[in-house]
Image 1 (cartoon, rainbow, N blue to C red):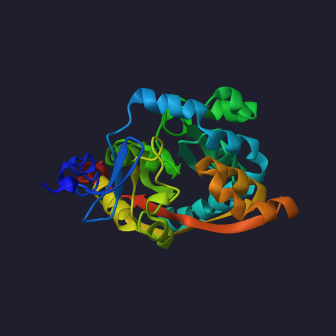
Image 2: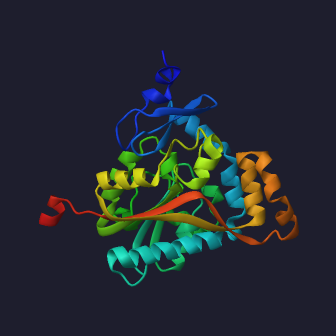
Length: 300
């Protein structure tokens, strides 16, 4: 009998295409499979609630983000300007002033802060955030661990953002459908996530940074995420590469959370110019889309 047909990954299904994943590789106790239809990669078995809670309580990459909060702020500001530009195209607004925004998986609120700086009425949601790590009282008021929270004053938001979030979810298709319900008519969604079919992902194979259990469960391809958004009720979908401008010292330490062997790549720059901002493409993508109105929405 073909060993591939007996693998755990082959018993899992693609969250987009609803067909069996084909075994790709194994990491620890998890097997990763790839969808033969859309290229999305998923881990199996799914991590438990306890595994996820324990992982996020000790995850080193979140501690690094807290340590380099100020230096990473510039990256969030660039992304916030991308959201502003997308909102102008999708929603026909002149800017983010008085636009309600909900950042799902906001961590300590760096992106919420960047949206506030552009005039948005921004709030954040993260069930795993430690309130003590949030740097200022204003952000503490705007960030919640309650997953039922939506936009301004608990209502729907004009814009929902998910930066490095959807790959962490056990049920991403359901999360996208729920996200649509959190968005107002004429509103939009903005997503940043790794791309399983990026050139870097293909070159690195199982060593691609995004393939990291327990944390990353499903890594979408660009076409897979577009298909998932269409199924969830979104239209006018745009996708592109995700570029980040990060300091050499931040990248050096972040690479250490993936594996110490990668750190030697940036060791000279870290020592010589620690504050140098590097334009980096790590195989990620940005996708934005507009909420499609249902028949009941139109009649209402």
